[in-house]
Amino acid sequence: MNYVVFDLEWNQPSDGKASRERDLLFEIIEIGAVKLDSEGNKIAEFSETIKPQVYNKLNFHIQKMLGIRMSDLKHSPTFPIVAKRFLKWCGDDVIFCTWGSQDLTELQRNISYYDMKPMSDGPIMFYNLQKIYADHIGGEAQAYNLESAVDNLGITKDIPFHRAYADAYYTAKIMAMMNKDCFYKGRSFDLYHLPRSEKEEIYDVIDSESLFVSKGYTDRSEITGNRKLMAMTCAKCKKRSLRPKVRWFSSNSKLYYGAAVCMVHGPIKCRLKLKHSDQGLVYIEKTMTYGTYDDIEEIKSRKKRLKEKTAKIAAEKKMAEYKES
Image (cartoon, rainbow, N blue to C red; front, side, top):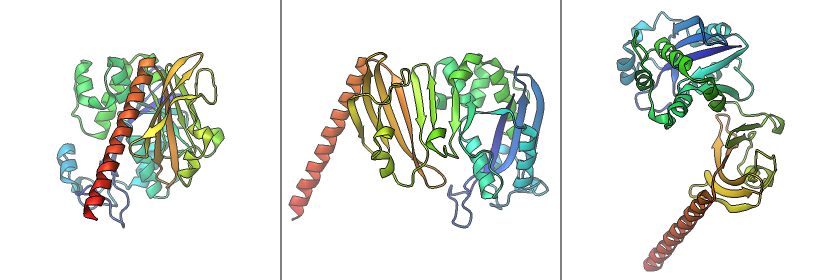
């Protein structure tokens, strides 16, 4: 088993929106990667630029950051050619590693855009080194860019940043300095392709937290009306359903909070996200975190404040309608 640490550079329209004719928002223009063996030793490198087929002009900010022009890419191979070379170079028995969670999804979106064979028919487990680094130093994942992590760890900056190979190179350097226990806790799942059936749904338990990812459904009512999917559970004792201390509540119909208590393992904070896949399906990510009774009281207070706020807005709306009539 090997690790493939990779990074992508992509172009996008100047207004940040894909058109109806060009429904690929981020068009990959460079792939860079470092392959490591199971001991973390570098065994191979990959670096190729790609000739754009979707956008014929480089976004100004992309051009400035990468230091390249469209003319520098005109003799490069197209994405399908480079992607096939890259995936062949990766091999079969690999774990992908990236800085952040977006690259693996965008790689699959570009593959889908060109009607290529999918990388996988379901979720892909990978290591998000940005998240793992944040856990390593006790911070928030999104707070650290790659260069600040390199500086913090005292890694020598011997090649310029902001090209695909360079960023993969530095990410691999950071990976080599992380404790292997961090990787166990920091595994992530790319959900471009959802579980195809209930048997393939994700149940992942790490220390004090569990993650559940459902298969896709055509309508959200198939989820909200499903008692099994909406159940609050204890992953440690595998009890399917606990009696809620705070029933699910939400302010935006997409993110729900609740709380329950397991008689064996104590208070559990519950969070449920309703999401949409690229294929138009609805699914949930449900996180159950073991906490304290103070956490339950805080969730109760949050629900009460939301209820009071909703009632106030409804009363103000009713008064406004009364005055207009």
